[in-house]
Length: 407
Image 1 (tube, rainbow, N blue to C red):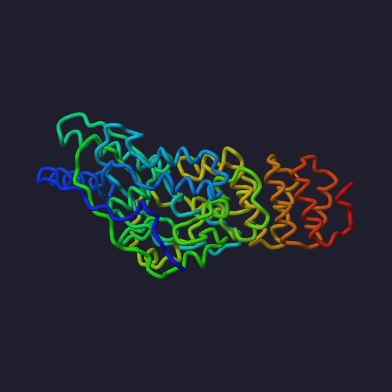
Image 2 (cartoon, rainbow, N blue to C red):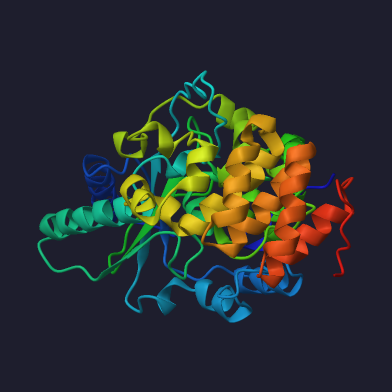
């Protein structure tokens, strides 16, 4: 399979520099490390040729469907960092590693889900921005004047991975994550735009070679070609950004994931060789931050959701999203012992979205009790979307009393 990097990632040699610029750049890199940003590189604030067109093609092909805020116009804007800060001359690209040894799920009687590693601890948006602010203050003290700057990570209108690749912080993997030497792709990225002329680093002349493990092992086949992800099929999208029902054809592929998916990173040879170097802020405070009980997620109140997940990236999925995902996961890994929990969710959960997915899970587990619950809900459920789930479940199962799904 041919693997061609997008045009905007082709090599750009750094501009001629001076000894004073090199010295300032070196000092700023040391300051970054001192302020909790151990991976650091520098690039210019010049635009990224071809990036806007690449993103427009991505949007036009439907590969960003469901992320309505990501438009071709946004892509064009993101291709030029000076749209964010007119005075920007350099970009400091930073990374914080979050790989740690995984003790795995505890051996107990609870069916448990999995949360993507990056969301185990503190929300990386808050953490990186706070450390970038500290770095900015240290830079101003170093140069002895106010420095105009912007602190960026993920949600800003800049392409973090394009900046990281051009700066040589890492290189684009075929799974579209940035691979950092010695750390794999277990790195959270951020940027500091500065009005300072710094010495840019050169991009790394490395790639994934012929390896296609991430493409072959993606649970949903979302990595449709090297460097190309079809977002609507990605489990991270479906478990986090998807606000409505998860498509039925994708549900069995979700496995036990309830927030995000790490498969493409876990199978990557570079990532598997990464040195465990976790930032303490990214470690889970409690078991529920990494391997929550699926039964508990179904029953979780809004107050419990806030208490356990406040300050983490998991809040992005909202309580209803986590409970929906837990229902699907139970449909994949649960047994008849989980039928009472799914029955309770199907009958009394306050979110119709959760009730509908609990019905699907009951149909997956099967058995006389599950079928009876589904049939009873057909007679009693008032919500139309949930009734659609019930109809689909009844059509695919052997009914106990053979009720008509058109009554």
